[in-house]
Image (spheres, one colour):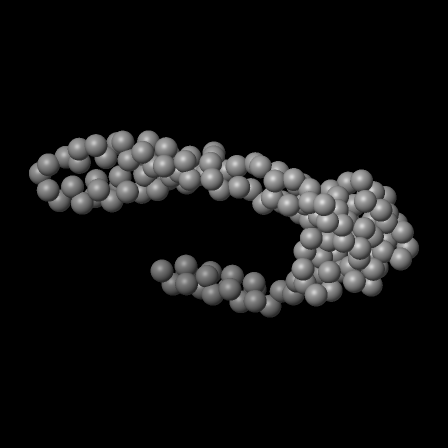
Length: 162
């Protein structure tokens, strides 16, 4: 026990004293200009992140056609170069749903409930009837919930950062 405590305290001490190494800033605006007609995520100086299609880019700024939940909106936003803090490549997910993720979460919840019921039934003489069906019921319920739970757009590779 003493050895485990010493090892744990040593690990905590070393993890607290190490400093994080900052990532190399990528401030090449030419890389942003090369992303014309590609999906991007743009973070502005006021902290907002906009997803969309990069319509045009020049030395003064960029124009992004905004992506909504189902498709591109008719709105285009112009950003001056000094307003942009970060630009990522992005994966725009129009109408994608989380059916499989919901099913896995539901099945895991069903297994957890089945284990709780089985542990409770271990104290009594009666076996838990139907506890094996809980994961199947949970997976079905999770898939139904996942059908209504849409995926969000996703940032990918960081292209520009100041």
